[in-house]
Amino acid sequence: MKVFEIRDPGTPGALRPTDREEPVPGPGEVLIEIRAASLNYRDLLILRGHYPNLRLPLIPLSDGAGTVVATGPGVSRVKIGDRVAGTFHQNWIDGPPPRHAIALGGDRDGVLAERVLLPEEGLVRIPDSLSFEEAATLPCAAVTAWNALFVQGSLRPGERVLVQGTGGVSLFALQFAKMAGAEVIVTSSSDQKLEKAARLGADSGINYRTFPEWDREVLSRTEGQGVDHVVEVGGAGTIARSLSCTRPGGHVAVIGVLSGGQAELPVFPVLAKQLRLQGIYVGSRTHFEQMLKAIVRNRIKPAIDRVIPFSSAPDAFRALEEENFTGKICLKF
Ligand SMILES: NC(=O)c1ccc[n+]([C@@H]2O[C@H](COP(=O)([O-])OP(=O)(O)OC[C@H]3O[C@@H](n4cnc5c(N)ncnc54)[C@H](OP(=O)(O)O)[C@@H]3O)[C@@H](O)[C@H]2O)c1
Image (cartoon, rainbow, N blue to C red):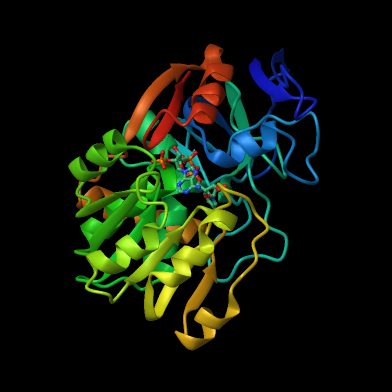
């Protein structure tokens, strides 16, 4: 079977097509024919060699969906023909996170392969209303946004949410926050992207190139109050401004490192405003399943920017790098 693997992260041509022997499911294992996958910024970090402790060669990507084609002895959660997606953390089922979470496409081989073997516990069934491409957008970005807003954030109708940029996590956060009756402010590098965010329901958009001090703009658009929640994906370059435009007692979901992962944290606003900084690392299978119910009931359609053939996977990584997209970039197998 055809796979793409990373042998030398950080080198040109690090992602290579390779033939591997098709795996045979053992006890509790399920063989899935992958039909679609999606990319996350994390996959770019891994390809660039900015991720520690990778087991090389590595089949990248955490997010894929497909059909069950074989099951090993004792499998009871799924059967041949079921449409499924892998969970990001293969060993975080419910409750608090495990001490050593095992993430697809990082701690173990991912889904950029025609067929993938996963433990039955690391799967969710995907609803009929979602295509394989749509389902493949969900395991990382959508579960992260869900966990940030509803599990850790306890978002309520009428609250204000700030989402940064128009990538995968942020557009899911926008859609989920609107679903819950919140007011959403989106920042972006581009007015065109802000128009797309407005079509998904954003109440207000701020171009952070036009307004480098975008936190002041957030404060001015919230009558000086600030927002209740920040979906913090910017990291080092945005965290201080995020703290500045969060209301006293508000919540900052610390998620991303788009502008770097080493920040100098201004402690004073955190204590003076009694802010809650909550680290998020995707979520559990239970979070994924709860989110799927909400997606179906509210007819949420993931924002897919483009679909690229599996054989052109390196083009998808280039597209992600160029940041000339909104929402998700998918691969079709
Ligand atoms: N902790 C977790 O569980 C978790 C899970 C998923 C992702 N993440 C992290 O969250 C971040 C976003 O991931 P993603 O996969 O959603 O990314 P993505 O889809 O690749 O999003 C990229 C977009 O982010 C925006 N952006 C880039 N630099 C920015 C900055 N300095 N400030 C604000 N926006 C910026 C740009 O949109 P505009 O042009 O519109 O500004 C860009 O197109 C990454 O750092 C990723 O590693 C963490």
